[in-house]
Image 1 (cartoon, one colour):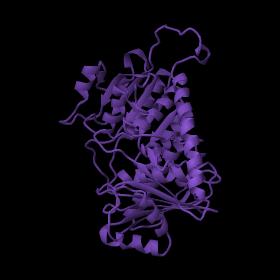
Image 2: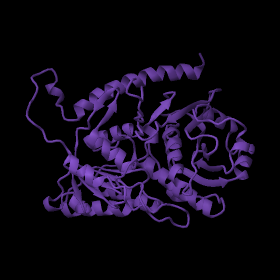
Image 3: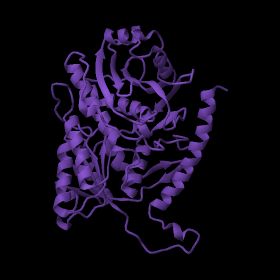
Image 4: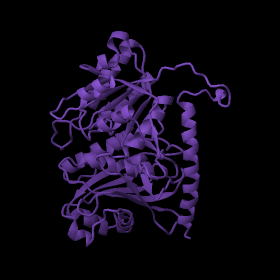
Length: 432
């Protein structure tokens, strides 16, 4: 057994065990008094914490359908049905497409479908909900000159904050995916939450989905270089680039010294991607290792298969480097690989995404949102999403400006990684 295999196997046992303890602890956190365990149970009915969902659209396979839908219907957890111990009481949908499922779902499950955000938060009664889902992904929104989708996350977040200010009360807010297409607006959202002292959580499902193999680098791992490969064929590059950067960041943030910020980003296209690899600006060895973990890996030479390669090169302030390669014709998975100082072998894993319509990678995301709503403290820092949002925005600037190397003080986001990143271990099907 190699050194890395030994470390991984030992950690897999430990993390699997702690995941079970965390589940048990979660049951206590969600409304059980630890002092009552083993004594006569308290049968007094308790009101479930009330949740409002502020969505862009609620249609089949939209993010709201998957996240808010799990708060309504529940989902499977370790082979058993798990019903979130919260009550989704109101819903606001910014758009109503032809395939709108919102009215029917709300009527069937006794959810109040609201016409405004203040109404959804309890306009007539002050602020009478306990947590907020802000799920602004999918829908018919314009794009700017950089082909960024102008999702109004910031604008709708500001409407939520206005209610907080008027009522003198605030509650935890979860923001799906990146905070904003504009890194300046993203920073304002984080600063607002700090100033008003309410919990803010954001990000993608990728950091918490299943990993094959189940690798959790310990905090302080001396990473030297990391690489993510993925595949997306779409005009709006940022959609999946953000996911790739969330993968890169949830691993690289665990390096020695914690996250000290990014020095520069550069977006490359076409032959410039291969040339950068040949010049060792990103590692072919890491790409081979990452692709080897991808079930969807295509056969044949990558330079022949991939017609329009894209890459974002990341230079961290501490000298560590990273890369995210969009290789649509070569894979549809998210593979990660890294070199670690003192290790001759390459660390690699696949961030596994069970396919729609179930899209079960929303299970671990929803579970982590539940932990956030129960405690008021995000299970992983919102600063990670601030950094990935900023990298994504500036990557689009680099693309617009002909692959210019972009430096910006906004990239200097510093934070420490969580002890456990919260990704799901174990089976991802009901059968185990």
